[in-house]
Amino acid sequence: MHRFGCRHSDNTIDVTFSVREADASIEVMLDIDFLLHPSWPSVDHLVLRPLRDGAEREVTVRLPADLEASYRFVRRARSEAGPAAGLDALRELVASGEADPDYPVFMSDAFGSGTTASRLVGPDAAPGHPVWAPGEQPEVALIRRHIALSDRTVTLLVPDTVQAVRRLVLMLDGDVWLDSLGIETAAARWNHGRAEPAAFAIIPTPDREMLAERDAIAALVVERVMPAVCGALGAQVAAEHVAIVGQSYGGLAAAGIVADRPERVGTAVVSSGSFWFVPGYDARDEADPGQLTRDLREASLPHSRFLLHAGREEGGMIDQSRMFADAALAAGASVTLETRPGGHDYAWYRHAVFDALEQW
Image (tube, rainbow, N blue to C red; front, side):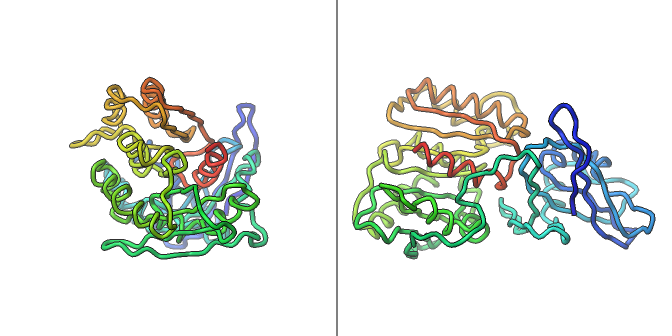
């Protein structure tokens, strides 16, 4: 469970997280990505301490009062040596995380770990996009079609109220949006009352390493998925009416497709894009721009659009997004960049995507 405590003058609030764990040999830690990841492996301040009865554990942390984030509890055997350093050890631990058993608002964790997280919504958090609000099913129905490719099945959501669809949203990491976030209801609500409804093509990318390979992901989306989708729709969709959505590596992929194939895809909606990426080594902690940003220095993109978001708590990801935005503007593209209260997290991505589609 989590509960809110003392407010502070800098718009932060104390949040106490608690869970039961009777085994004294097990250590329980709080996993919120922008708290756990930068402090790894010096995570003592995130370890839940036993209360008087020994079974109840809790820890209090100070968080932005407007935050929307996902959190989990991770358990490991106590060790005199402490946690192992390195990204691989952190990823292994995070993949074992579990949702808060005493808080019923869950969302499936993204980025391939397959675990479930609980959602924290601060007392000053924005209401978010209304497509995610609980309530009745939307009046506009979507027809679900399955497009089988040789290595994956694309789910196409088509409004049943129009004869011809002229707008298309391509969503990378579609397995997360479809299986975990309830994209069908959200897409139907977004289309309700709209003069030009859009079809949503949900593209699963379980092979997430492909997302950083520009040629491979462009070949998948532009040369395989789009012809199949347009065939199912019975019409071609002009580039200015095609938007591609991606987060993290998927955001890098979406931006790369618009940069490399502007004649087919006109708009990229990017949350926490991995613009630090450089082929051949891990450059995520470097201050220099990544490969895609560098390549934009030679590009001309007068008809392209990039709708970018980064989490306010993501540190260097914000700087990388700003460098990419500057390079895209210099190439002639239309660019917006917003920071959102949160970390590397679908808790706010889901709102940012539909806020961006309102501008598209």
